Structure formats: structure tokens, C-alpha cells
Length: 107
Image (cartoon, one colour):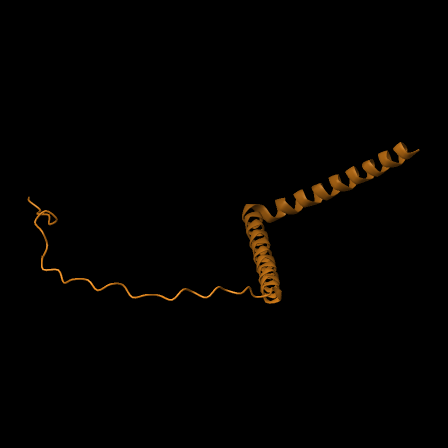
């Protein structure tokens, strides 16, 4: 009995899908090529806009959750830096550039 029920459900769904497919095909023929391309472009634009809004909303939720989590975390004590000593003074250099480090460009 269960199999007969599901066979009937499948047959009804197949009939319904075939009928809807024929209607969609008829509407596509009436629109023509330009109408179908325009419809596809409009649908793609709407899908992209929805995806953008969804990504922005998810990003805002994630940012808010991260901020809340960082505020709840107790600050960890930072070790105090060691005192810095000044470097030893350097002797003044009396040499200029040496010929070995300069490069001469020849044609």
C-alpha cells in the first residue's frame, strides 16, 4: 500500500512538473531571445545584490561578536619593559666613500 501511495505521489509530481515546464517553455518562446537574456541578467543582478546584503549582515554580526568577545576577555598583564641604555658614542669618521664601493658606468 505504501509503494502504491508513493507511486501516485511521484506520478502526480511528474505530471505537475511537465505541465509547469511546458508553461515555462511557452513563456520563453513569447519573450524571445532578447527578453530571455534580459530576464537572466536581471535575475543574476538580484541574486548578487541579495548575496552582497547577506555577506554584509553576516560580517556585521561577526564583527559585533568579536568585539563583544574581546571586551569580555580579561586584559592580560603586560611585563614592564627593561630600561633602555643609550648606545656608546661613535667616533667621527674621517673617510669618505672608498673607490672600491663606488661604481662607474661606462657606455
